[in-house]
Image (tube, rainbow, N blue to C red; front, side, top):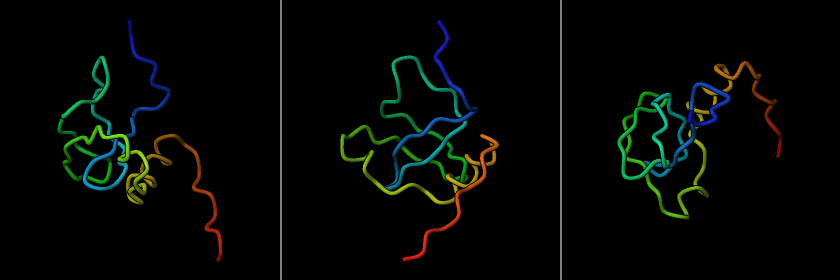
Length: 78
């Protein structure tokens, strides 16, 4: 049975940021895998609970919005 994947990328934490990757999502989810991110950085997936609370990689975020054909929201002023 195929894994549901609405976009040609998946999000995964690693390298102290949440990154997007176009690598094939493994059955059973990411473990201690190495992936290449949309920003071009190779990372090792971090499966710790706190890793999902890390900031999102801005380069992966921009690339993911392009692939999803969804424009980036305007920046919010402080």
